[in-house]
Length: 208
Image 1: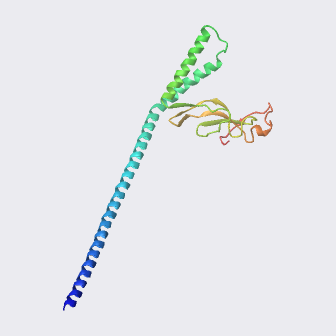
Image 2: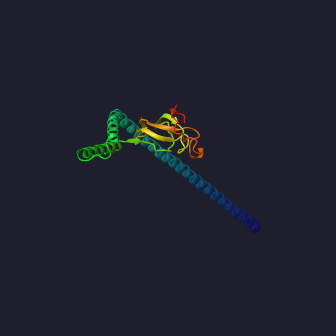
Image 3: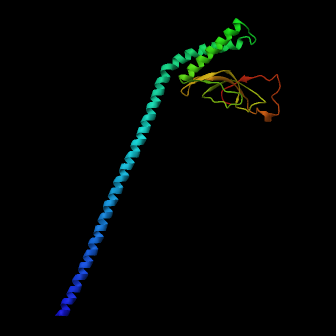
């Protein structure tokens, strides 16, 4: 009888240990499920936060673009009118005598200061001067090709000379710069093939 009781007791102890092990395993699985749920919730909030930041940046960019567009529209017409004043000042200075003295020299200095102040006012309001130098690439968005001619100093498709400066307002062209563009095959590699003084320019279709 004692052996039976001992056997029963051993079986009970084994059953208890197995039950405790199963309970521990279930508890661990439950804890992992809670952790997984928390991680998933964290990832959702993180994704929402990133989306909110991206939307805020997009809203900011749209607002800046709209503000620039409104400002550009408001002053573009006025700016175009002032370009005529700038052109008149430039032509006056270009035709002024270089060796002027006395009152004439003072007048020329005054014109130069006026031009400088006008250009500074342009820049302060987003109106920038576009005046490409020799060798700069022709940009159809900023430049208007008035003629194409061969050159032995600059490569083909680049600017030889600016005939009239242009202006851009907040990156948008108000008036394209009028330029002379080098013909295809131009440049130092041409070996002076275009050095003939009889070479004349031709009308350019804008596709350098």
